[in-house]
Image (cartoon, rainbow, N blue to C red):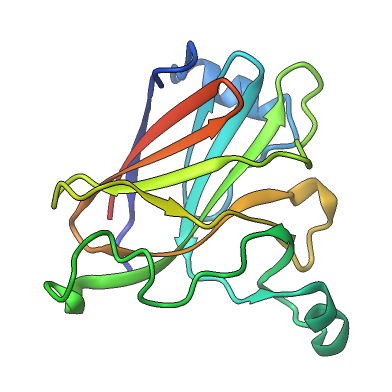
Length: 185
């Protein structure tokens, strides 16, 4: 699996201070912990945003977790249902299907004032394939947590399809704050 690379940049709706020095300090002071995949942090006026893009995750309803007792994956607590493979194809159409790869895109949001996870957010997450210059596509944002992690792991996102080698823009808007991340698959 190729490693994804990302850079956080300023969003238009908020003053973002995503400097290398501020990122580790902000993440260390909050419950927003980096994941095992590609992780980048952006600091907004009110909140800390941590983007994590990793391998596709199995996603379960609360009822499925109670019945199946999975050891790994995500439990969906609200918001959109899981995205099916092939959805969010980054505007690639039928071209380059062999290079398409499923990934799990999630955004952790923590209050800068308290350091606690924001568990009642309704972020708007969009994904744009900058390489193919496609239109921004809305990521159906499910509120979820790792099946073995508990409420301190609440985050928002879904499984998405990315094309190997393509550059993407991930924009996260929450109220008047907006942060933008650039990643390369």
